[in-house]
Length: 574
Image (cartoon, rainbow, N blue to C red; front, side, top):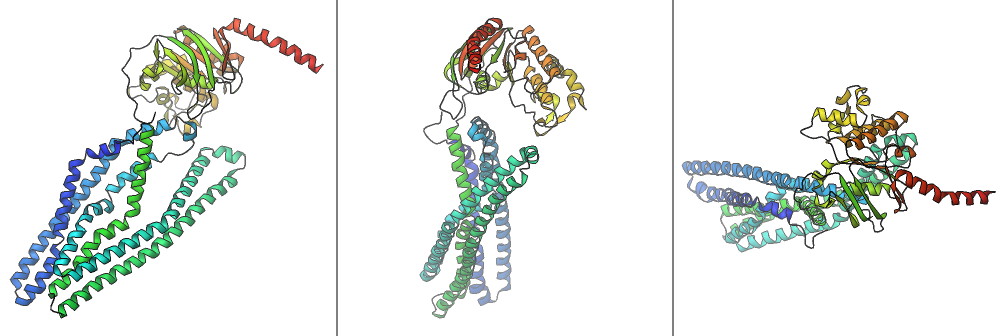
């Protein structure tokens, strides 16, 4: 459940770098103070050195300036390194948390179809710390100080600098307002094109087999062209205003120089102050201009922060439950009802059953009857909307998900093997994988000989979800993965959908082995061959439990219930 108040995790992660940010602020203060060296040096050269014609004074002043600027460069370099590391720390601190939220978001089928931008948002925030944009934010408070120095030279110079700042800000606001819509349209179109491109890459065989490539290419090209048009429109507007701002900036510098010269002619200003005033105007406008130039990046980072905050608020970190002792093979479903994530209508309800060690339950029923829903609920993927599932007396939610996964073996309907070797996939990519346990799992799943027949045996590498293998091979390797780690519950969703006769024989042998080892096995299937080694049958239809009990009793009951309907259909046809 989402929290009522926005997540403060990003702010809390930044607080860990509080003293580093204080150091950056001190560096910035020193750098900006030292930036006054240039105007002061110019003032002294014009008013003292040229007047006194003292070479020694010039050498001393120049030596001091060289030292100050070297110091300023070192401080600026150090400030950039510190800011980059603050960003890296923020990324490191939040990366795992954000990815866990992304994975939880993917539990919702509607969200799974969309590509999540959360990782990109986090990288956007981190990148801000390494750009001039963030440094400009620390420099911006010093602009009023430069303006104050100009007022000390002469009030007219100060007012000209203020007017210049206001005009540049006005141009920046105009730029933002005129280009914002086009930039947003470009981002949306780019996301659409990226999503369509990813979908095409994933389903390339379907595209080629059905001759759909050109049609789908046209849809992706349309999205790309919309993005390009929007970017060009924003670029034209932004480029025009940027050119005006650049020309205006040069004009302002010349205007300040002209004003200073006029004040010199009026004996209201010295020649050194005239040159220093022109330089100070550049210094005062510098942070403003830099902030304005980097404003789109600042805005993107701000939008990324808002998106991440919304994600972390909607999907707060789960509290880790207390570790429970390893359960015994006992499971009970008590008036279970399940609503798919994001849905409103239960696709499964009223399920009641108990099972003990050595039981194998065949879950049968027509398509879309709720078998896969039950499978997902049994392994904790979908939470009960009503009732509960208890493993050795404890509800599934009382187990840590990672801990629960070690007690369960799950074979989903759509088998996906991850990039790596067959052995790594069977071992669930454990860092402490036991080769002997891998072989035992494969033997229990009757897949050992199949794997040895592959080019490199257990070291055969698979990529792209295991597309190099046939559906039957993936299914049998997935079954071996389900057996790994000696789980007490096996949940097999349509385990024979892609198997040939040899594979079905191996599956039945694996179910028999599981019963001998004292495991509880759920076999979701609409094939009668799945019943061979099951001692219990659960019949589901339209999400409701129609029958449950010993296999032969349930089958007789179902046949007796079907006989009148069959006779009536025959009479109607006659």
